Image (cartoon, rainbow, N blue to C red; front, side):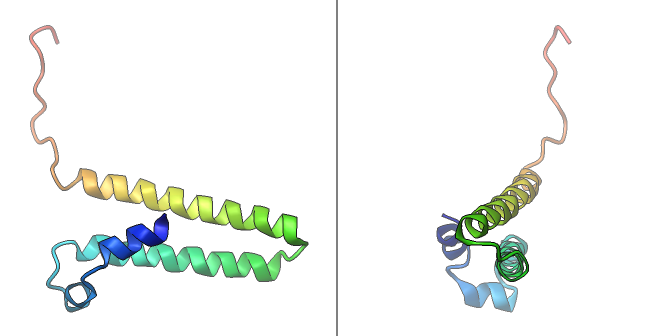
Length: 93
C-alpha cells in the first residue's frame, strides 16, 4: 500500500527533482519517510536477529511506526493547504 502511494505521488519524478512540481515538499518528505523505514527495517533485521517469528514481529512494529508517523505528518501537511482562516461561529456560541 505504501509503495502504491509512493509511486502515485512521485509519478512525475523529473518535475520533483527539478523543483518545478507544486507538491515537491510532500513527495520528497514521503521519500524520506520511505528511506527511514527501509533503513530502520534493515537495522532491526541486523541488530535483533532472534528467529523468524521475532524478526517478523520487529519488522511489523517498525513498518507500522513508520507508516503512522508518515500519516500524522501527511495529515498535518495537507491540512495546511486550505486552512480555515476565520472560524464561522453559530448564533448560539
